[in-house]
Length: 259
Image 1 (cartoon, one colour):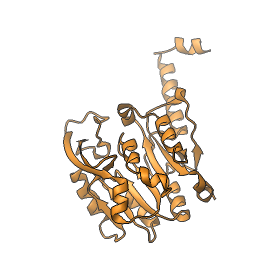
Image 2 (image 1 turned 30 degrees about the horizontal axis):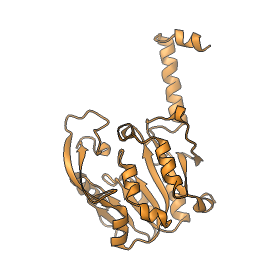
Image 3 (image 1 turned 180 degrees about the horizontal axis):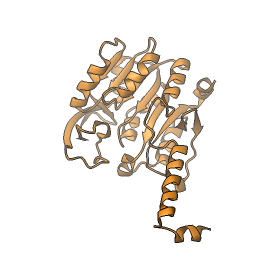
Image 4 (image 1 turned 45 degrees about the horizontal axis):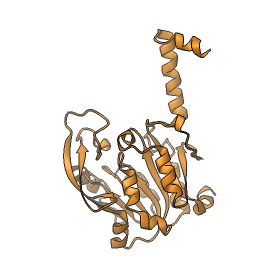
């Protein structure tokens, strides 16, 4: 059967079936579904913030798309939104203005304080990255941006528990996590939402990298689906960089989160 299918490679019918099969599998695996209202993100956010105490950190806030979706569920907790690229930060600050418990921050987070070079395209700001952009953009420029460690920010602001740490920084996720090492060691961060996609080909971070990182601190990793979180088990033969959302949940918090 496999030889029969392969021998039809390039034919109109076989190509059409292959494309339809790929579209089906991508939908089945919730791949590259960035609509927060239907991809399971908002459901997971609501579950976390109604069941787990602590503030929210939004790392890689862009213009506040994720932040504005989260605001209705904050209650009396605070949301700290970090955007490293100054022109994007202006839009972020404007979009979250008027919410006393939302704090936009014009810095990125990393494993050390200093500056980094960020590739930025005004026409596609959501793919800004310390690595080359995943799309060819004629208007892209390189911007020098300030970064700090998450542990330092927590100490400076007096944040206690963190219910949810969201990270979407196009390949720099591990550097951000390393900057929170002290917070992870003392269990201050309960859950983490992160994205894994094309930029991680450039950073060299497979999903195994994330599973091993979180395992050191007692967290399990789950794939986000529209109606639930499914435990993630790394299989090198199924490694892909097409774009999915994941959660890491402290093992002793899982029961509260799933109840």
